[in-house]
Length: 177
Image (cartoon, rainbow, N blue to C red; front, side, top):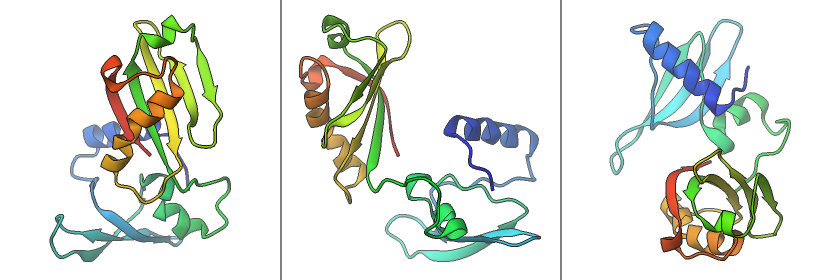
């Protein structure tokens, strides 16, 4: 088993799509239920079906299975059980690229670690042009992605210098992990 960073997975995905046409199948938006392997093959049980319709479980087997199922990884749990090295956090990480002139106005530069029980994270300059990466963990569990994003103004107001309102910054990209 190999664990790759997200950027390396995207490189591998592009390579597979270019070089492996007809040989490799990539599936998205399916729920992985279970994964196993033996000395000859790997297989996964996947819940498939459109939103709001009856779901069914399908088994896929292959020489290799690549799981990109993130922090709540069924792949990791299937392969390692409770003995996964490291820590899996129960909450979401919200990562976004942000334009906000308040960083420069308040003298922020480089990487800034925020240490707080509720509003913690990393805020770092993304090069020239005023783009910053704002990453924080939301300690609430069980929300939908949209509900986490509705909480973003509260986190930004608490974490960013000058306590900005949403009209004062521009979000370029957001990922939830």
